[in-house]
Image (cartoon, rainbow, N blue to C red; front, side, top):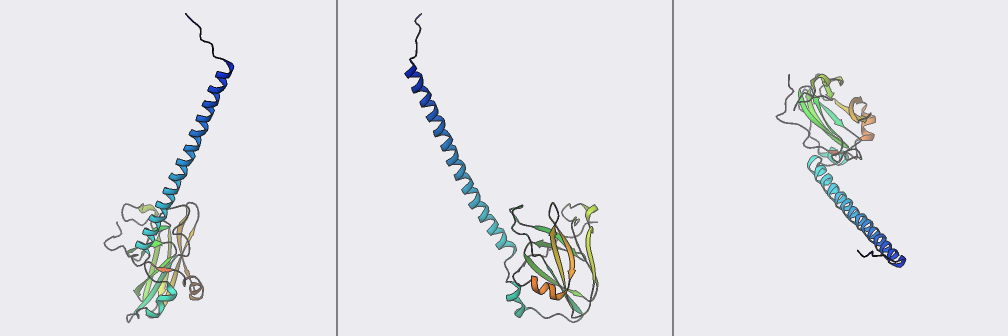
Length: 200
């Protein structure tokens, strides 16, 4: 049997080819990863834009007040809004949750507002664990505020986004405070979850 001996120069050439191949492979991997990240970013931005357009398509508060509908006799108005979230780094879909105004289920979406007209009297806003769509009933009412509304009166409920994981919490605020927070927010036109009821 013949023994094949590789010269030192042959080994060097082989090692250089191997190193070059490894370098080329790593560069190709970086290029592929960069392309994947770019596609992901573009897709995510597109999805967020579509979600924002589908959920918050109304005018800004500052633009809509001149066309606001008048209150029915015996009714007051409640504005519910959030100045935080949607979209945010922790969620592609942005901050979102369900809340109730009395027995009606509504959606909270970050950086939007909506309003409901309510009969004069006592009312309650709650968020977290709304027992609809299988939500945990044990959490229902954990974060709630109650308030009195007079005929012709307008009140404001601010949904503060805080904690970890981030959750909305309701707080009644004075009109002067709300008027400094609302102007840039867009109307969330599809906030009312029609057909969704609070489960027993």
